Amino acid sequence: MQKKNWQGKHPPSSYSLWAGIHPQTRKAIPYLLLLLAWQLMATLVWTLRGIPFPNPGETILHFFRLLWGSPLLGSSIFLHVGVSLSRWLLGFTLAALLGIGVGIITGWFAYLDTIITPLLTLLQPIPSLAWIPVAILLLGLGFTSTVFIIILAAFFPIAVTTSSGIKNVDPILIQAARMLGAKNYTILIRVALPASLPQILSGLRVGLANGWRALIAAEMVAGTGSGLGFAIYQSRWNLDYPSAFACISLIALTGLLVEGFVFTTMEERTIKRWGGSTREVK
Image 1 (tube, rainbow, N blue to C red):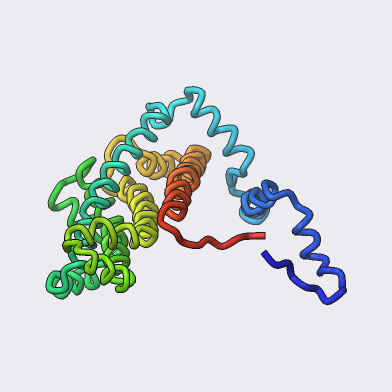
Image 2 (cartoon, helix red, strand yellow):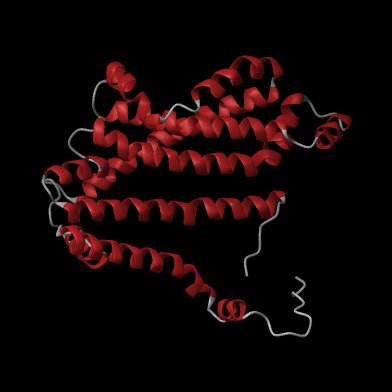
């Protein structure tokens, strides 16, 4: 990459300072700023209102106490995490299968696109939490209704981005495959889907995040007995705010791990195999 020309002058001091920081340290800076803002907020709440507000240190200590066996609502923290993850995984898997399937048929078949896409456009803006009364009426409280909310939250972005990815495949690739004698099914599997993989992955990433947020909120309203959302909601009534903050931190860490280790790896492999571009960060 061509270096920036500063026309014989020294680069700006801010640029020099940033360039001198180790890359791994740069990645930690946003999280350190978040912890600093959290500590300042806790101090201000205590100073101005006299209300104990769990700071990062207290939350981390309580988090480790929960990991070491301290009960949370009479159960282990691992039970709540396991229940939430199982709901999330099941709901997201069903949403991914359904969303990719609907996206393929609407992106490939024009007549189905005319029928289905307006319905997706109509229903997509509805917040997932607005479906909770429908879920409770249809499925009652508990596991099934929570999974239903996750499916609705994750389905729409996956379906829309998959359909858009297939529609935006370079027509030259389609024409070249037809000239080589490829049938429609072969073109779809061997040309259209690989070319649309970056957009499909983007939809899966958004759907996964939407499903995780919807899970926590649904567990607060429709959950019964276990789950991180249920634990946060009940901790409020018990005035056990350290436990609530520990669960919130665990939710953030779970999302960060999935984002960093699952989707980043998938995107890198997709770009490496099928081509694409990434933005180089200095």
